[in-house]
Image (cartoon, rainbow, N blue to C red; front, side, top):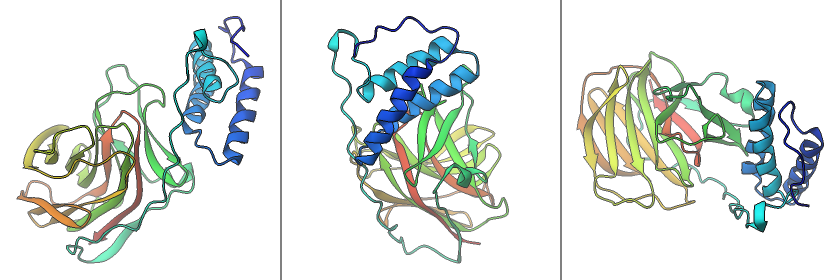
Length: 286
């Protein structure tokens, strides 16, 4: 049916919400990826709870278009659904891992994020980069699950006393500009290995930085493969004393020396554009 509903400016359209929920459930039963529609639906509910009914219903109508409840304006085609994400492979060892397995993160539900926290600069409009669990994967979902901004955002966990560690993860990019890893994080101080993704030149696309009081300084810039769309890779960052080494699929791609940061937690990074997925986040060391 077309969108013949009057503007809903006082409350969320409950009838439309029920239809969207029914179609989402049916699509999930067929094994279809409806994550975008789910995110729009959830953001609509959240916005309605905050009193932004008009914006909430706008997002709900977009979700309704994606699952076929509503027809887009002028019968414009809806965005084609993304193909299902393939199962993530086991992480590839770099050979630089030393010590014990300190972290082997699992993501079965949002409850698994309780020990994690965001790092990175705030947005100009006060929005919050959203990290969620989706089909057993840690994923970045833009800002508040609605907008996308080209600002860095990280997600970390662990022990501030961790010193010499290798941080590694399997990661997949869909539309985001980069994925990466964080080591020795305390507040807005950390090392960050950034891997620029598909659609970019291969020269200098692997970047090693130290972030001190929120200000990033490049300490290594390496040439390497641009990550292909919708493909799993293992990336790793090793911090042993002042030696920092970066790996892609177990291959050393660059190294630098820096003794500024000596200990801290670990995690992953990207930009708040949605479409970054992580699994098998592990920390080996002491």
